[in-house]
Length: 245
Ligand code: PXP
Image (cartoon, rainbow, N blue to C red; front, side):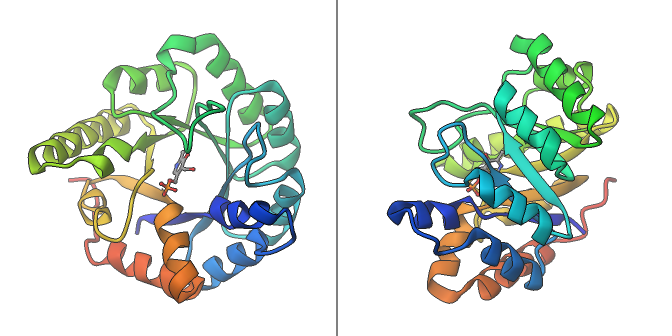
């Protein structure tokens, strides 16, 4: 069964619009878990635009499934991760002006930095995943720096506007997944996934985890977190199983 990690950053985005105490991302994490989420993902950005430091400690206490901490390889943030001890840390690139994470991490272009960050997290007992594009060169670099998992960026697939483009992106994701599995990496995917486009992703053999935020929180605003998470689990299960052939 593919795990669903629900990214609750946008609950904090709404709260930060008023700098108040509601809605509480921890409450959202608990409701998502009760509805069947297999894990909770939160991203502490350097600019603290949504999740705040105090949220992390409360989340760490409240999440008993799998807590995936997304972060950039900055010294200050890595020190927080090491203290927090999430089950998993996903290293992402971060730019101040971006609306959301744009593109995967260039692991091959900064081997030393990512190797050091990976070692620091792994030494603290944290499973390390690298958020990368579906590019074989980046997969090889992820192996070189000692990551245990990679999360393929599905944003380009999600943004595809023609069938040809979409099929091309799926083919890249399929071959990169196979390449990663052959090298002993666990394969996760995320970014831009929604109730419609998740089906083709779930059919890729060997994918272990999806991290989904915006579409679930958007639906939750209208129909509630419980229904939004259950609907996503249903959309994912319809196309299961996806064991590697
Ligand atoms: N995975 C990673 C590494 C991300 O940075 C994000 C966005 O924070 C997601 C998954 C979730 O993306 P979305 O909000 O588009 O579902």
